[in-house]
Amino acid sequence: MQKVYDLPAPEMLTQQAEWLAAARGRLFRQVGIARRKRVLDVGAGYGAVTGELVRRAGGPVVALDRAVAALREGGAAFAGAARTGGDARWLPFADAVFDLVFTQLTLLWIQPLMRALDEIHRVLRPGGVLLALEPDYGGLIEYPPEIAARELWLSALKRAGADPLIGRALPGLLAARGFTVNVDFFESLYAPSPARFDFLRDLPLTAAEALALADIEAEALVRHSPWAQIAHLPFFLVMALKPES
Image 1 (cartoon, rainbow, N blue to C red):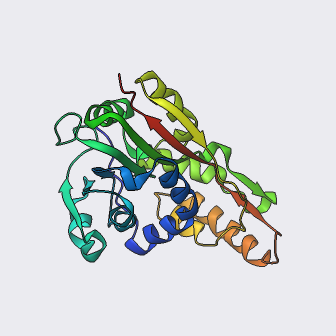
Image 2: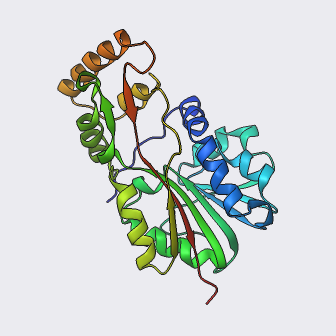
């Protein structure tokens, strides 16, 4: 049975969505989101991105999450969108009904992932597109070594039931399913936010890991001058097209 990790707090997910806004916007422009007449937001959570999809898409948006409570609590974030509880491995929709499926930091939590990719392929129309923004914690770049938390991320995410290396695996899995895949990455490197530690602390850490994280945070706090530290998490920005035939 797949482990179920509770969603982070709504404000944390909003912060996460803001970090990814520029990359997400670039993907939306590349696929011509205004021409996409029916959109599915998989792993919508509290609706951190749903409103953006509603504003930019050319037709109805459906927000789906297995955390039904989050869909209820999202309130105004879902204005203009339909909400439905459901699991990405068993999507409650007919074949070939969506022009665009969007997912952000969701596929790493799904096992077996291929089952969900099969379902996404099924509900997409020919010519439809999956947009997925997924991290690869194995490629996390941190400097200086005193602020490195990579091993904590890897162990805590695995313990929570996630695949921390989803980014590097996803393009091949999608290609094997029959998608035509294009992959992009962030264009710029930004100074790291201390809020990243809030997300790590929210994961199931051991007592020893929690102490190690406290030491890392203390080191990061004193290295606050510009570019005194680097923490860059690679994101695979995936555009996967379902061929016309």
